[in-house]
Length: 270
Ligand code: HPA
Image (cartoon, rainbow, N blue to C red; front, top):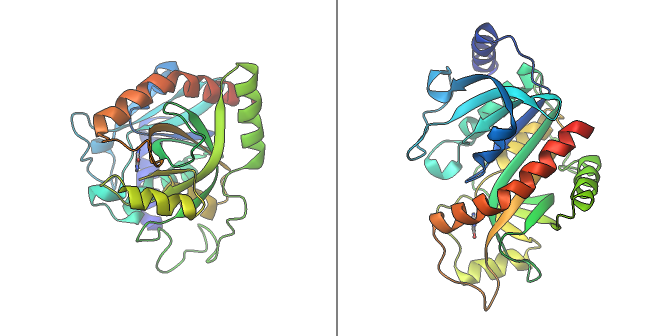
């Protein structure tokens, strides 16, 4: 894998001379942050060696390099999901490359279903911990000690200082934020009412189909992480209704301005 990471990193570095300090992974319906980036370079995933082929409908993903809130960032517009058929090494490969490119912080966004009865549709939730419920672990197999330890610590998967900063920025802008545990599972089905109940009992506040693999791999490499969810639907007894991908995208698009503002201001204070 080290060879593949260097090949891809070299390809990018030969194409552009730009050292990103912050990596950003943008979730479903959350590409709007890109409009705030002063873009210097864009590279389509299809051009990048070892990047998996995107199965995302309509548009193919790209890596965007530029400046946001005074920081050099690399943003993934479109991520790789396990349910698309990629294995976990493929899903998390871009995070490996980001680290080699120089990234020192990882920011991740996603859309998720709320199982906390206090949540409302459209809420932002700062992820303060996660439960890994995916059927495959991204660090399964022989460990490469040059990347990180065999048994990585996960006692602070989500950086406490970044969480405090996010809360400060949200309060300063009168943006309501929830905070809680994200349970990641494979999808692509949304949950049955019984599954939402189980997820709540297990200790989660929200559930989604991403983020956990990328955070695990970033923590393997000791990168401090911050992640935020937009609650696009509710898996709460009495409030469960049919949910479609379109609903998820629409709610995400509505709440994304608030999230973009928080992330941009966090960049300024990093
Ligand atoms: N479940 C899983 N993933 C999701 C959901 C959900 O309810 N909403 C958005 N992504």
